[in-house]
Length: 261
Image (cartoon, rainbow, N blue to C red; front, side, top):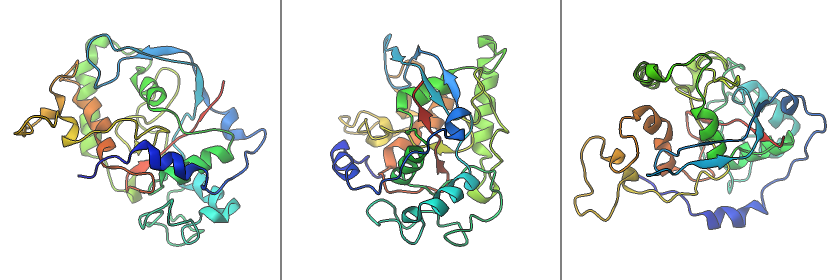
């Protein structure tokens, strides 16, 4: 398993990332959901460990193939065959028939997009990628009318969504799965999503304490020492962090944008 890239190389590379100008009065930003200030408890933090989040706005749905197709049409520097190799790998938009053909299902979430390309898309719409805390806070908000007593049933449903998750060419259209109480869709059980600071934790050994000589190699060892070992839906959502670098475009890795209030 690959380690997370350290934050230093990404910081040094940002100055060279192809720039795109923000569009004033952008309709995507106008349609974003307002997320009020609040707090949540991170998955891997013990004790109280509550993290406060300032208010922000978040895309109600993930960026779609159609959205990203319009972006690369307007910004040729981010097309598959012209994007700098420094910022994308060989998997970047690999499933598209051509640079300006995203194939069928333009209302499905775009995947195979690097962190750098996702960041550029958001900047072009006057936004940015959400921080990990912002994303996790939004993902922690329940569905309308949710009863905390129904948590086992909710976990079972998220597990089923994860197990049935199809390949990128058969993903559901955005806005078809779980919606939180603010109206943000599909934060569970569809794709993984980039965050601005995805590399803020150096995780090895699948999140276990690597000081153990036996690396605690047993099923679910990654949940040892966390506040709620039963939160396996959370582990499914977060497990991908330990194998990413900014140029990678995963088969089920997409994104959505955040904006100032």
